[in-house]
Length: 342
Image (cartoon, rainbow, N blue to C red; front, top):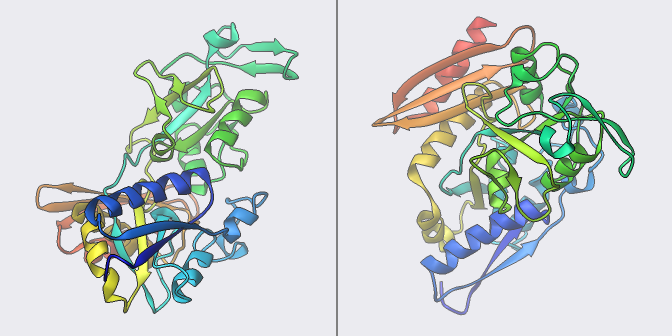
């Protein structure tokens, strides 16, 4: 590879996807200052299906909803690397492609987002009239709200089967309607719509958009509607989806030019964790929209993998630990435990 080569990095066009791609671009330029890198924005099927419910059965949704077109660009040599939210990348990749690298994982926790009672000028969970936005009964809550602290009948909007199941496990009296749109769009819907009381978003996505949850629980950043609060949910409360918080970089299997780049971008501990999670998902026979959750952590020289299935009946949980260098076996072991429980 010479300094004259331009390495094309494919990404979706959403604000979050581009933010993630720019993180990868910056790492590439820092590690290889003599090479030229550029981003190429590609619209995916998922971007075109903005009205589709992600909570529908996975068989009703196209495979590789947010990745297929990027993979086609790699196969046709129109791009050299593709940047994905790893949670969106199927476990079975095309034969000519591979997961070349995984960047250091961001915080994998979820955030419960809700309106601030003080901002609305109402008592906790009491209605407030606001004729400017046509909202006759927007409810607000105090900081540090827990899922169990929501009133019966409260609507927590999410299109994730995983989140719906865990919300209802903690609080069976909730309503869990679907919601679509990017991070800021979902926040705006929550701020404006009286029929919604809260939503759940990934902390990693919020952070990568330069938004933040302050120590006082306020949501701040460009585009964030005023008067929103957030409670970061521990993984014991809301187990993440497979690969949450991690950025995956896909490349052609036989392209040795890019092997050194992928090696420099890869974060070993993150790779071992997500490999265990993805092995679990593959062994469960599911895809990115499967009703399962899994989260692996490095503890010394060991990997600990916790997982849950929400496919039918009550939530089933399992966990196991194993050597850090054998994540595939660990993922399969935990999947076998869950299948035995079923």
